[in-house]
Image (cartoon, rainbow, N blue to C red):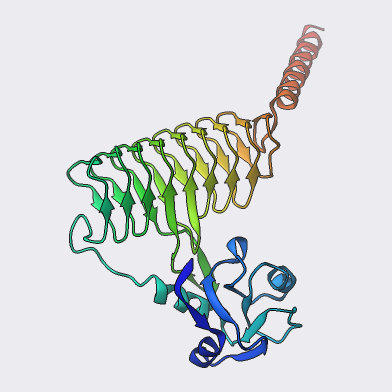
Length: 315
């Protein structure tokens, strides 16, 4: 998430009672979780085993809970609770504004777009030319819907990220300050749910086709011209390449990468990164040729055992 205006690190430290290390003249231009950071961004870390990953990331300003060696060109802001400061900054730049009407006055909708009755459109949404949104859809704040997009009835776009931090025995929800970007010529079926990013974007690439009752988690990137069949679920921050086909009831875990032109067969469970151009099947998913060979071997083994059992009974 980018800030409308840069924020001085001195101002942030003063506001949250933090202590500065490193470059004290920096300005923050945005805020992001570690997986999405860019130069100029703020991020946070409060678990020591993740210090190195965070300090060596592209982030320029790091909210941290104890002193550490500050890399050149970066700024550390030492705080008792970095997460609370991070969450407060996101809320400041994406404040909660409940809708008072079905379509916000701040939404920008192309005159050629068709919006059926009962559609809810949040603040700062943009909808492109020739897009068709059926009844009872929800389009959350800051969502960007391209041109020639079709969204069928009851689909929810831009819902909060399923992202919680455990503090003092309770789960605290992160403020979802990200958005959803639906590129041109996407077709989304009925009853789908697409979460917005925590601080970045969830993206559905141009020309992709999504069947009914598909769930796409926060920060997921679905490539161009993909096909997702019914009841597919994709965990947060996973990246799906271009022209990928994912068949019914397949589940893909979070923080993974699926290569271009991969095929994931129905009811498969993906728990690791997948190569480009390969067909996968099973739980955990593996190359379909290997899985089918194993199934055939198991069937033959079972048949052999049944045959041996029959001979023993006959004796």
